[in-house]
Picture 1 (cartoon, rainbow, N blue to C red):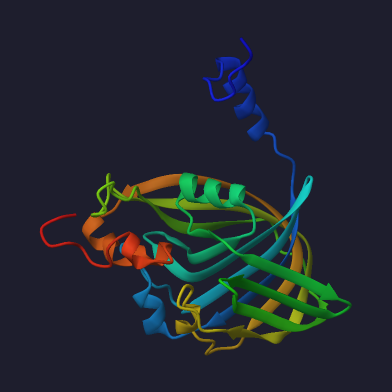
Picture 2 (cartoon, one colour):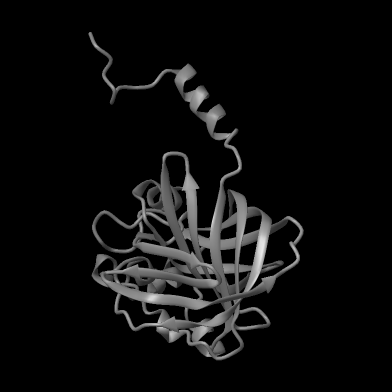
Length: 265
């Protein structure tokens, strides 16, 4: 009988897949990063417990073009500064991806809020343009001109906070306890330049990032970096406390209730 490809893989095949995944080469991306201060009350309002605001109400946007072997990936993130006891990091609200494989891996493994979207990073001479778009709306746009080189930072570790959970089969709450995941990213930078420009946030019912306006100075850079990512579950969280925030993950909040149902979690 011919090999049935949906059939079970052998132990040797599974071991080979694990070995190959552990030896991935450095993959470099070209990306624009914008950082600004926003309304502290608005920032605090989007953080599910047990996350708390940090000392500064910062928003960070990453918009990257990744040259993977055989194809190009657009990857974006709109995140706010957050703290979990002993750790300062970032809580991503939306992470547009241009390819399904990047989307499903991040959502299913780490609980990242990835969605299919359009990601643009363009540079012509000194002029830089980057954007994140979904449903025909460029809800984040970064525009400017390169104004000079910056010293390269030392390799660093950054932490994103994500919630991983299984929505209930019957549509009410969860089928298991949600967990808080620390996504740990080791990052190296080989080129970095300052960009003088601005950030435009456009109204979108699907990605309402305009609720976190630019209120402080905008710091924009463009550079080339590589990173890896590992994750660890740090604690189980209250389903009752997390449920009012689950609409952040979906375009249609009716896919799971905005508020905990009476008497059920």
